[in-house]
Image 1 (cartoon, helix red, strand yellow):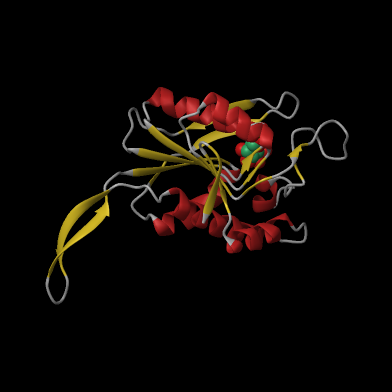
Image 2 (cartoon, protein in one colour):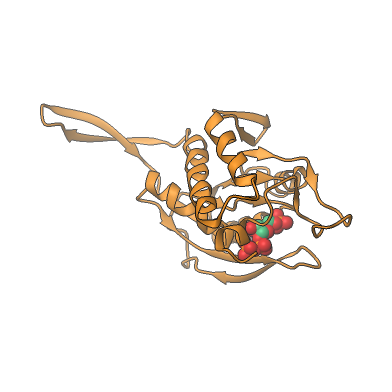
Amino acid sequence: MSSKTSSNVFRSTHPLVTHKLTLLRDKRTEPKKFRELVSEVAAMLVYEATLDLPLKPQPIETPLAEFEGHVVQDKIGLVPILRAGLGMVNGIWNLIPQAEVWHIGLYRDEQTLQPVEYYNKLPVSPTVQLCLVLDPMLATGGSAVATIDILKDWGADRIKFVGILAAPEGVQALSDAHPDVPIHMAVIDERLTGDEGPWPAGFIWPGLGDAGDRQFGTG
Ligand code: PRP
């Protein structure tokens, strides 16, 4: 259950996603529960984001008869953006256990809000046909744009972005930079914070705080 908000942007309308998102936003939610929710919401979003996966025939035998089955044709790569994207991996891996996982490390400079790359574990050339870029937060969009730049330079030809919470500014920046990349989110919030405080500029409002810190207990 996802609704298309513009040409390539999908927002989940599933009641379970909305329910879990409310728990994620709640500041009383402890890191253990927060991690479980990130993983569960990620799996539900990927269930929707993979509706168009091509299938190929696979003949098998059931205990009773020969049968022409179908299996997913493409190799899929999960590309979590460290750190916060890590929490999305396990839920999705349970759905797609054959997926490969390739990590990209970026942090957002607190002053400039620009992404800084610190880790890249991609192999020399692409080993998968579809990359799912994972990051729960799409704020300015800088981290997502930079990661997809890296993947395209690497040679990836089909890429989807799967996040949980977005600011309109991030959706716009990612759509402008990579109009070919579908964006799957649980929700698009009101705006990014400015300099009005008490939160630093560039946080999603009303949001859920810092998804990395809330998962890893480092806030
Ligand atoms: C946060 C978040 C995203 C990024 C989003 O990461 O997890 O990766 O910022 O912001 P953007 O859309 O403006 O680029 P952060 O840099 O705090 O690192 P962390 O995941 O290690 O906490």
